[in-house]
Image (cartoon, rainbow, N blue to C red):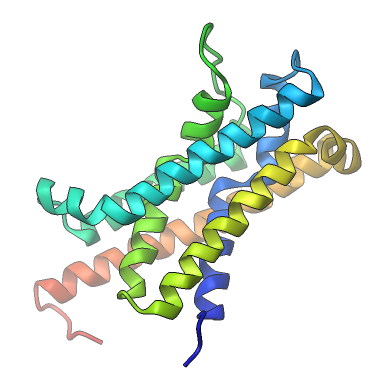
Length: 210
């Protein structure tokens, strides 16, 4: 028996990567931390990643209980999540990912970096759906944990070395990667919408369960 479901691991990581969009956070992170020293920027990156992972993991563990308490079905959550991700993908495609206001007196590592930029609704919904797809199987649960840890490391590396990455890619390179992420995210969101409609039809007996 495999300890880790590698295919499931790859699917979770790719989806989270596209949703969170580490390359797209580079220009935002640089603009929000432009007055910080290198040490302060490193700390801000660590705090932001920690907050984001904590939020995503919390919803991954307790999300089902919240849904049950509020009488929300998973297909309904999936459909709303698909719409939400579609809106996010359109923002990426139209170059509006940087429209985040910086409030005075607020630690930017917490808001808007930790949430909603990194630990936003899109990543939360996606993670909850993956937890549901894992069916409590150990290889898939391990894959979820590993994917989340690897995602945290990738996020920290991108933000910690944001200035270096921005110089290597250039403005055009960062924009290109962000637009490609937008296209992929749009495809994922549409698939989520199709899957939710399929689940609704199965629930009502319109089509047979596969």
